[in-house]
Length: 266
Image 1: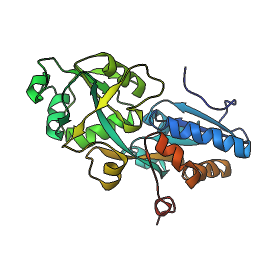
Image 2 (image 1 turned 60 degrees about the vertical axis):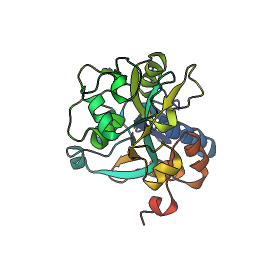
Image 3 (image 1 turned 135 degrees about the vertical axis):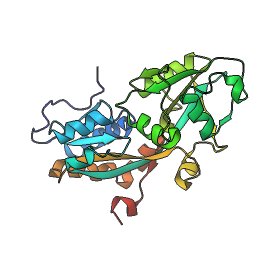
């Protein structure tokens, strides 16, 4: 079942907005949908299909807004989409809470995910096989991690490939040798029964301060994309998402709000 907010199913219906895309962006899009509906009475339908699926949905007209945890690629740049930054985010590298490793360099991360480092003892940990947990190719988080960390190296094909942030978190929490990467906002989950731990990268802990300053190396923006000029209802919802009234909700979800200058394009 897809996570949905709203009660209508047609993207073209009057007084209804359809948002499709990134699972990372779901906490922002869904919370904004609830607040916006309460204020305006306009129904907002939100689904988490992955960044690529959301961009495709907006391009072919089956959604009003795509939420994405990556920028459009070279092919998607030809689709006539408009980009809106809705928040800033850091990608946290997570391990099992029993894992003693506290820090990895980006070079070590690259070698781990390329299959060159296969045991935690090679990076100061226990003599335990590393269990790689990766995201599927539709994931914007995977695309960002690949761009920032892998630097042209290929992912190890032996990795477990999962479709959702929650799945990655769950597997790492239950497997002593596992490593994964998820948005910082999902490291501490109120809904998960087990815990994971985010490690430092290049001796920098992932936090709002280090992400905002640029000190944490695996950082990115979160986006909305629309086709051309959005309809008035969609534009009003976008304005609501990047307004000051959403700042506390964005922070509670583990992300960093955009500033007034950014949202105004200055």
